[in-house]
Figure 1 (cartoon, rainbow, N blue to C red):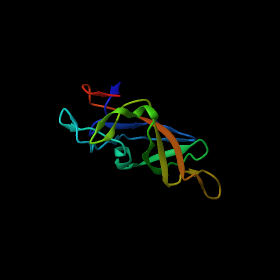
Figure 2: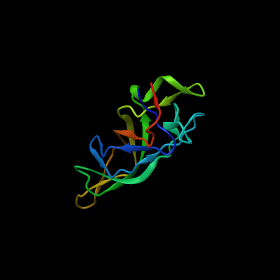
Figure 3: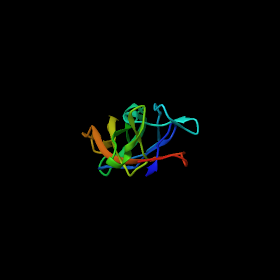
Figure 4: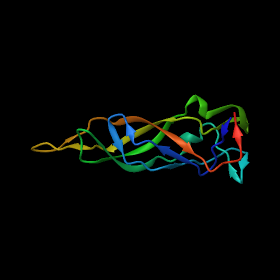
Length: 142
């Protein structure tokens, strides 16, 4: 059993996204489940996809040290982050679990200092991870 993620809980992104180092900000989950915990709607399957992309936030790589910008989002949940027995409105609730798969989508490429002109990072996406931080200390699901 693990704590259920609820409305306004944080999606906390790790700073390492493959070769990119991202200056992260937390995402805010919006719960759409029918059930509530302490008055806050629970988060259910697919609410992670409804979270607004976080950013733009800066990033660099080892070779591209002039910062670029991009957006953070949740790509997919880990197997232990969707309840198998606890539901709300027929949908599995989201659990804190381990780590979700995250995506950093480049909007402005970082640049590599080079004469006569800087060279842009050619990657358009970087994969990373993150976890949920919940305010819920009451309700658990499985």
